[in-house]
Each structure stands twice: as structure tokens, then as C-alpha cells.
Amino acid sequence: MLVSHESPISMLETSRKYNDYDYALVHLFETHPQYYNFFKVSLNLGREVLLDNSIFELGEAFDSEKFAEYVEELKPTYYVVPDVLEDSAATIASFHKFNLNYPNLPGLKIGVVQGTTYQELVDCYKYMSDNADYIAISFDYSWYQGATSLTKRDRLNFTERQQILQRQRGGRKRLINMLIEDRVWNHSKPHHLLGCSLADEFADYSSIKSIRSVDTSNPVVAGIVGERYLKGIGLLDKPSILLADLIKEGISPDQREDILYNTSEFKKLL
Image (cartoon, rainbow, N blue to C red; front, side, top):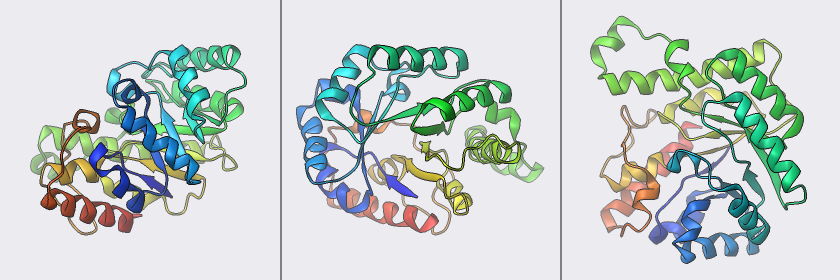
């Protein structure tokens, strides 16, 4: 599984050592030309670049017309077609409209699965399986909260926030298993896992070869706030700050050491 950890501008050059490919948030192109230029150089170096529509950071996908212009200009290896959070029908409509309006953009199209029920997720998955080059599944669907249960011990020992993270961790695993069991999963198409709640989730996917890639800033943000991964586990909680809000962060030697340690431990979890 290929891994990319979004990193502050001050760590971008170093990030090529711990990232298998480079993951770009399009909204940061508007205000940080150095950030944009990094990905342009990466492509010239022959590295893969995935361009995201920044929906997680903005709450809604970046403007489609501007997004298409950046795809045309940057020419990323892959790009996430604008989607709509937890809305299957609107995401399908957005994907269809984007393809009609911009049929000849360079790069492979990533279609995100969205929905609030299992059937909606299945419907969206089937559409992306038929129409996208690459299928993406998020870490934080609200469906996960009802799709998994915790033991009494976990409910007593974990805070409310930690319980949410545990359900997200188990929820995505359950969704993927259900899609496979129901013969919906397309083993011939590459899949991308968007973000994570708890890093040890990824130890569960080694046998699913069609899960090709994952992105998460988790080990980097943890290092910035002074948290180190536990060996074989990762974190029991998750820093609430977004990497995009730390994009201009200066990194101290201690933070750098923690980031490098965490990214190394994340790899071991795979």
C-alpha cells in the first residue's frame, strides 16, 4: 500500500523520503505558490502526485472550474473529482457533470464513495466502479458510528472522542468487508483510503491487494504536537487540528525527530 502524509511546507523536501507519492490540497495552491511548485517539481522528478479537491478542509469541494484549471495546469497523476459529503446522489451528479464539462483533463479520475446508509454507499460505489479510474473511501462516514459496536470494557476505558475514533476505525473495515462479501467490491480497480482515525486500522488490509494507496497527516500532526506513536499501535487518540492549518508551521529539531519516528512506525503498521 502506497502512503502519503501531508506535511508543512518546511517539511516538504524531507517528506519525499517518507512518502511513496505526493498528496496535494488544491485550496493551498491559491495562497502558497511554494507549495504548488513543490508538486510541479515532484512530477518532473517522475513521482506520482494526487490532487485532492480539499472537501475535508473546506466542508465542500473546491470550485469545480478552478479545480479543472489546476488539473490542466499541474497535470497530476490522479485527481479527486469534486464530491459532496455523505450525499450519494449529489456526488454521482457532480462526477457526471464534471466529466461532461471537462472530458479531456490529464490524469486519472478518482471517484469518492459517499452516502449515509449502506445502500447509498453501495449505489455510489457501483457508479464509481463503472465510471472512475480509481475508487476512494473516506474514514469518517456517519454510517460507521452505527455499523460497529464496542465492548463494555472499551466503553468504560475510552473517552467519548476515543469511542468515535474506534467506531470509525472499525466502520471502514466493516464497510470494505461487506462490499467484498456482497460481491460489490471491484478487485480489478485500484482503491484509495482517504485519511484515518487510528493508524492501526491499516494493518487489517494487507490481504486486499486492490487497496493501492492511503493518505493521512496523522503521524505528522502527532509529531508537531509532540506525540509519538506507540509501537504496533500508533495513537489511542487523534490530534484535532488539521494539517492545512499548520501548513506554514516551522519545525523544530525535536518535532522533526518525532515526525520521522511516527512516519516510520506508520509504515511498520502496514
